[in-house]
Image 1: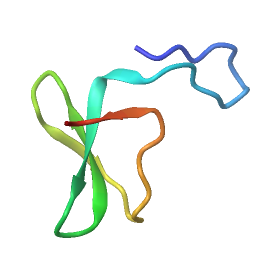
Image 2: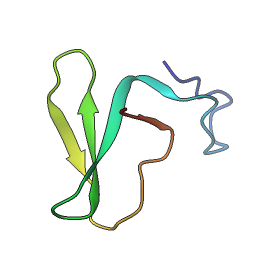
Image 3: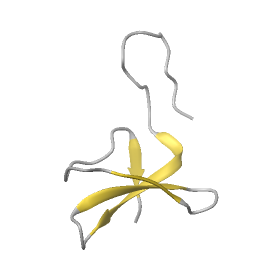
Image 4: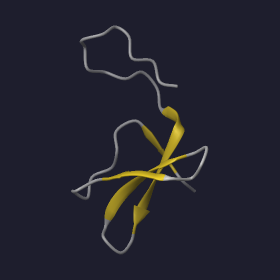
Length: 57
């Protein structure tokens, strides 16, 4: 998991290992997915990527 210390500085140290993101070619947005079950968790409204989440190959 990512380390979120010290609290209050709004910075994450490292990537989130239990989640991945992929690009949806139809809507041109990023989709976050749970690595354990493969369930989709969230979709970005803009074309930007999720911060601190690994990309799927």
